Image (tube, rainbow over all chains, first blue to last red; front, side, top):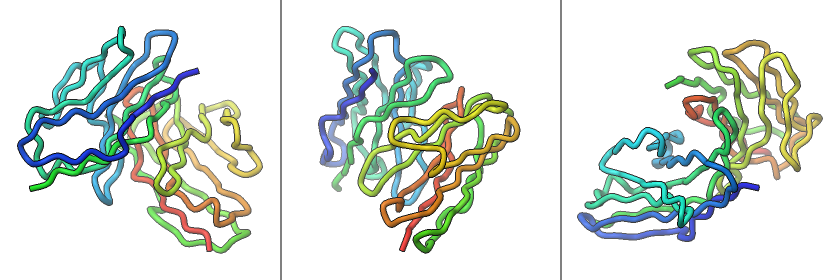
Length: 109
Length: 110
């Protein structure tokens, strides 16, 4: 079975501070990991996926297979980063996603 | 990435009635997925819909309650049948390989 855990329901930081949203997963094979962001009253948006190795809006995430983690990081948080963030996993290409419980990021001025 | 148009965006329905949600994709996709996001919760997969075959439902979801159609490679519908207040949620569709989502349907059952 595949499982995604986001241990923090809420993360509050000040503007300009570094941010790390934690994501741990459980999967016996080679997973594909994703981060989604949901701004207030907007649709769920794909932020990044580990296979693309892109940096979107200053966010990066590295897949650590040894620690089974895919933490999302940004060196300097902005107020507009305040949103709900979901980590997700798929076990096979073209397969369904399993989501973590989500972390609400609040960036204070 | 595929662009998904989902409608309605929201609805308020009476208990015991049914609502059909539509998702239209701007390109042909093999797999479409329907998810539910209950208030304050994360997303849970309802079913996988492939064109030309019966939808595959996850544990806890049944076809009689959530019938799905997938008539072609760009369109799918999800019906929420015989609704109760517990069905009040956001319903979303998603496709692969882009893993993008529709804008969601916010359903309130009164």
